Length: 207
Image 1 (cartoon, rainbow, N blue to C red):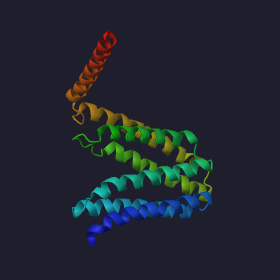
Image 2 (image 1 turned 90 degrees about the horizontal axis):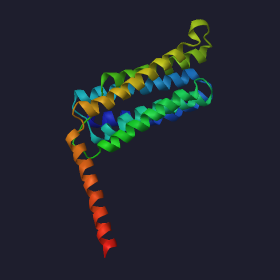
Image 3 (image 1 turned 30 degrees about the horizontal axis):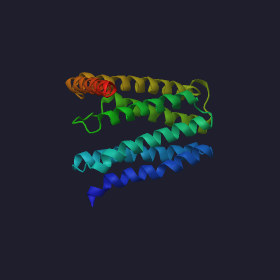
Image 4 (image 1 turned 45 degrees about the horizontal axis):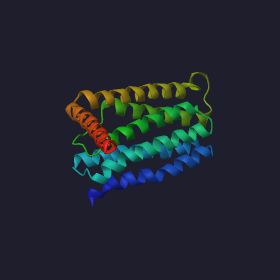
C-alpha cells in the first residue's frame, strides 16, 4: 500500500493545478495560496517518502519533475495574464525549460545521469517563495515596502534560474556527463560520411 503513496501525491499535484489557476483568475488569492501550499507540501512529502522507504519508481522520476514544472509555469502564466508580473519573467522561465528539454533530448539514450543540484533546488524554492508573497500581497493589498517585494523575489529567482542553467551546462560538459571523446568521434564519423558521399557522387558523375 505504501509503495503507491509517492505516485499518488504526485497525481494530486497535477489535480491541484486547475484549482490554483481558477482561483488566481477569480481574484481568490488566499485560496490559490492554500492550494499552492498544499501542492508544495505534497511535493516535499512524496520525495521524503520515496527516498526513506526506497520507493523511487520510473513513474516518479518522470512525473514528479513534470508536476513541479507544470505547477510553476501554470501559476506564473496566470499571474502574467492578470498583469501581476511582467511577461518577460514567464518568457525567461519558458526559455530555460526549453533549453533543459533540448539537453535532455540530447542525452537521451546515453549512459549518463544528471542529478539535481543545490542551485537548481534553490531556484525552485525562490520561485515558490516569490509566488507565495505575490499571492499574499495582492490578497491583502499590501503597500509600502511590501508592494514590490514579490517582484524583487522574482528577479532573485530568475537570477538563480539562469545561474543554475549555466552550471548544469558546465557540469554536463566538464564533469563527465558527456564523453568528450564520443563527441569527437561523432564529428569525425559525420565528416567521414560526408566525404564518402561526395566521392560516390563524383564516381556517379564520371560514369
